[in-house]
Length: 222
Image (cartoon, rainbow, N blue to C red; front, top):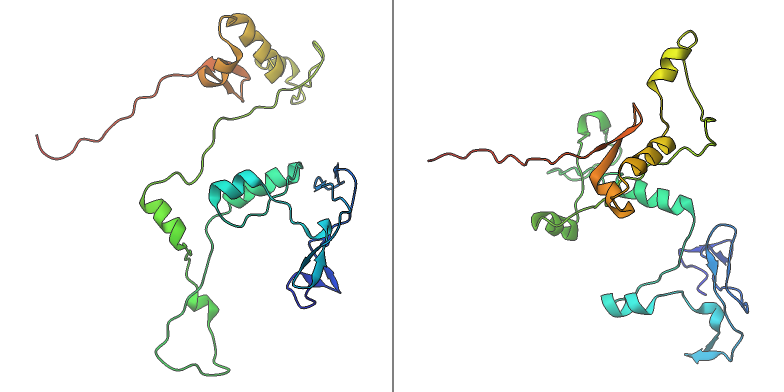
């Protein structure tokens, strides 16, 4: 391992290479898998012996599909899902560019407030993706977390002095409303509920989704 590689810190690799030899695959406490790496005979490349400790995890299917160098590891923790969602919706990259005709002068006074521009940087692949109208992101459906509780033991929030009014208005929880919906619509399969019904989170009840009309604005001419 090259001692001046960018991943080297205090003489060791930040990515944990070389990996440890192990007889079985297991999951670490952080959710990353520790793949089986058998202690086989080393392979010599350019006079340097290599064992399974130096093998980078990858996926043969993705290598064949994309025909490029691609390293892949499974990460089965909730924080990874949160990171992906945050990364997608964080917005475009930002860059501040200043064009000057005069040669660069050392120790010049820079007014960062005056030079501030609210700009974004779009790379060539992303620009072509937008020009051709490809989908930038997709969302299949919305998930609602159902309140889990025993019969008549749901959690109730109320303002002091308005206990009866609050109790009368909030007859259902997300769980009891879902069970009531299944009772009223027993002929609909479970896979049809998300597309045909939605939930009113304020009043806690399910209602049927209405059809939407797409209006096309009129153009000039007859």
